[in-house]
Image 1 (cartoon, rainbow, N blue to C red):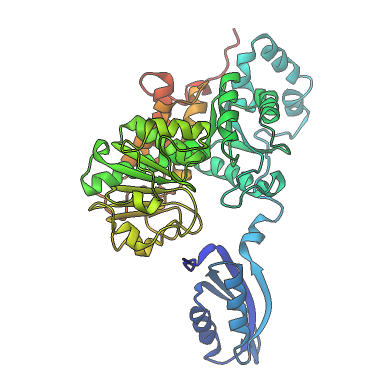
Image 2: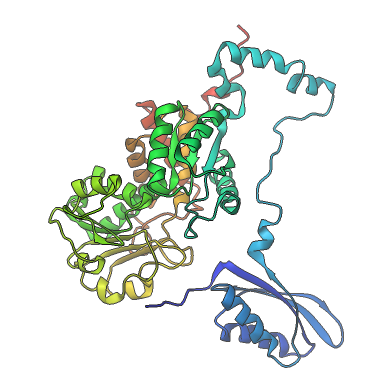
Length: 479
């Protein structure tokens, strides 16, 4: 079963071409790009003379092979000369995506003496006498480490720490843009769990939180558990908890759309790794009716040979009827499908066996478990992880606000209650007047979302009414 990928900005190219200076040439370019199934997003004239016009044609394509096909299609036009092809994604990454900038001016000896020696020594001694002051007097107050070993990067697999850097840089940029959180990539050239724990423990004094990223299961569970035990700052594995928060938020609103209760629905989850396990645990804590967990061997069930630790837990807490068949068979009569696994596992006919007013979250990226166009023929609510489809379920809705709240509260731990509060804040960010089958989650650019999530997390962390995040901005007392 194959499904052609849809064009996206991730494979955007700019083609510089020279064409004859007549009234039809530029129109032929855009028509040819459209005929090649590209989506034209911009066209700019960069130079011209009496005989030729030089144009930059920018378009979205589906993948590298499609981009090459589009270029060949343009080259085949009479009078067209392709002069240069630029991959806009690679251009964006040249030299990296983040930088360090100073918050203080260093214009003269007076400022230098306070920012560095001799004045800095007084601050160092104050922290030595009271280590908790590091949260106020250093970057620890607003800085987290984005830690990865490169063993489970996006859908790319075990590509190592150097290849993981572009993702970690991007994550750091998102933390700053959406949560005002300073984050820094920490990629580790080891995949030994104990060594990772030891390194992160040694680095921890500089940070107010640890965001684990793209570490393969089941090691990610062990690493997170050991770090939580050892550190007095929150440890948050975004592939687990960020995904779970966003899925719960989306499901909360999807159930509102179809008029069903969480306690009444049966959910089928494809993918029982880090993300899938976290999703199922959070749904169970929220009181979901029943879950059937599926992975490559089919439905996880009691009596199944070769169960790992996390799968043993799932078998004990899900699948009330002990169903033991395939993923497609598990969908029969189910209310909700959640996919965090692999592309093109299902067809529309499989979705057709689900209960009325079915909900489908096919979140494998870039190609989902079922073509969303097919799923919409049978399901009332369909969501994906793609930005070019309605109802994008994106961790960006959660993690910037989560860490903003954790840092503001100086929270020592991350808890399930914080996750539930964050999910509710995201769901409630979609106003009742806006909620429908195509809008079950807010836009990642909605400015209300991150502050709402932060406030919800702060309130749980403080165990009381939401504190004022600006309360620590008062000047230090001299006595």
